[in-house]
Length: 623
Image (cartoon, rainbow, N blue to C red; front, side, top):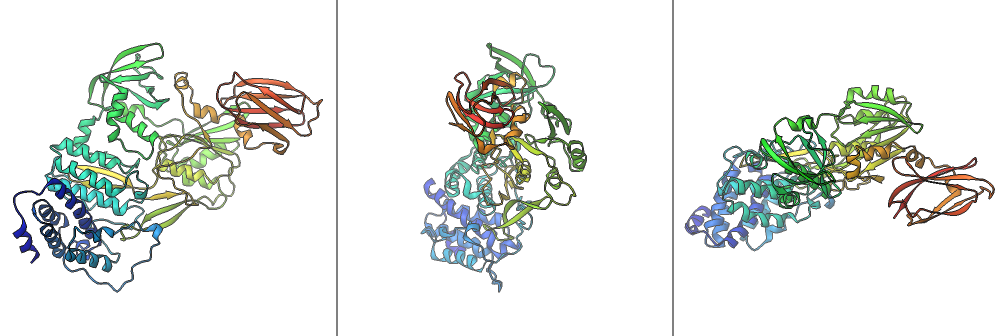
């Protein structure tokens, strides 16, 4: 009866856009809900993608709401009766159940359709589903690829299939759905018109790209031939980072003498750099602002192979420089760091330095053997690691320690999650007893962030850098009509105390950023901060109950009090910057006093007091 009624009410004249888009909104929800909950659809008894096209036709051409409901009823009945199971639905606490089925009660649905949807809901029990596999750490969607490779510019119904497939995947399998800036329902309503009205492959692709950025997820990569052609696939012979609100050259390949490290990019390919950043921002994915700025750099630098121009400011004026993009520059610029480790002595402190992007698991024992007697090991996590943290942790913790809580999808129970716990360490007869320092910034992503978390329980850990990419956990891949592949974080990662890491990342003990002056001088400011004996002293302050320094932070004047020093006992009070440079020194012989530092620039410093009786170092901050 539903099929006959729908055919009777359909016409060749589409309904007004506002009606059509409203129907599509609820059709998306109903179709996706049935896809992941109906036993017949889960078993693969029906091509659920092709069924959608029938309901889209009803949404567009049925002149009455009853006709639209007939088209929805038709495909739900085509799926067959919902099986009844004697199993009990697993209990899931509200905090791990992201499902909200209140939309089923909306007036747009008839009683018949509501009843069909409610029957699916009430009879649902977790079971195998041909469209996904959730038995691993992250949901696997490899089987859901119909019409993926058919055309760069799919027909309207297949563009809507792409939207509906993607929206429902995120609705039911994205553990960070509740952390998006915008409500996911609101995003669906916003993007339906753009997907319907896309007039060619590029407008469709760029609309979809904008949609994927709404996840606020640094794992939200986007790949398609149309998109790559539009954005370009070749890299210049230099790279740049966003430093002090400028796009600054940080590395240049040989053979480009007119481009210097520290040059500020003012325009590229004839377009002002800030105009580029403003226009391209809507296409850049990221969990937080620093990683979005980094993504903009990458997007701006990419282009077609061949000659191009850049306008540079080296501090003395502007210069227009020609360069060439090609397919090999990127790999040559981002070669792995060498060596895997080294060591150095600075001001009497013995530091080991480990490049985590080259340290492989099998070399960890030899690395620790070489650096065992160091005062501290600095692990540089500003490039992507190679999976060595589990082996490293064995040399740091005598027994297993909890590293993270992980929120993974419930097995074949869409929209629900369960907690898992990750442990590291243990198994070695001796553990390293020096201090550990880790360096990180916005380039520290995913496994890099988990590597940071692997160091977190270490009692002498010092964290230096800035906000990381804020996207940890395994990645899931989505295949969509239009030859689009896109990605999202498929595993929620939290600290053992359930503190959120998605979008926040790793928080440093000492926030240190690069500066343009430092880049031009060839100074790695994070590494310079770490290679400082005073930093190690901060973690081992002597006589801390006997010494007071205030106010801290201070403006120009700083007061000190030393208990039991004696008024006739002279001592030296020194101020050092983060690079270990002595900025000021005072000879004192009073246990209380004041020092004036009006010429000292704002920033973080170390104050050291040395006498025959007292040795004291502390961090001070000048406003």
